[in-house]
Length: 250
Ligand code: 13P
Image 1 (cartoon, helix red, strand yellow):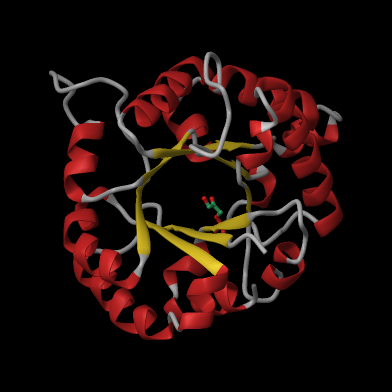
Image 2 (cartoon, helix red, strand yellow):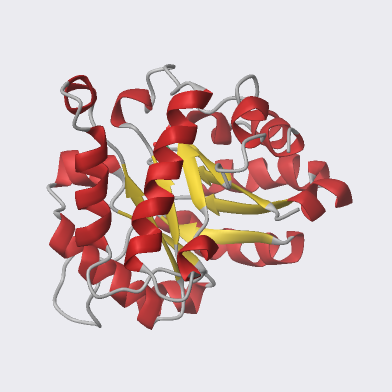
């Protein structure tokens, strides 16, 4: 069995003190069987990365950044380069989270530059895609997700160096999870798109995560699906017990 990926996106929550307290509570719960079945990833805020890096490394938890700038160093006030993220011990980078798209105007072509830059830096991009409620109701979910994938992965051959997170916008922070059937069928669709963009069957190697109100109660059903290679958890990842219960449900 392939390990399931259990990723936590802390968004703009937790101070450095809170982050270290989370590790104090969470790391002792990472028992051997859990670590054999799951790959754990945490994406705290930039200000927490340096202080969490050594303890995450010792515990076998990968550290992700929530964003990056695609360029090298330069006059980009407020931005963070990939060299800085590598230096601090980050291995994964979230790209194109729906909050970045909706609140900060990030467009597919800019996200494509980020995906390429993350790969060039030797890190793993986690490209987030997903439709809004209006798009789903207009029966456009597939078209929207396919466009996000094609443009976000322009000139990128998808393979095991990257991950996709399917996060339907209407399920994020709302308590509404996609049904297992909805999630499975969109994951199958994403897999087909990846196959068509990949060469030599490498599209099979791209893990596809589900995100959107994942909780200890619904995680077992989602993670039991072969098509769902892991989860990207927001709110429930802030609580060490809930995040551990989600990982334990694998
Ligand atoms: P919630 O789990 O809080 O719905 O957030 C999902 C998410 O946006 C993870 O990136």
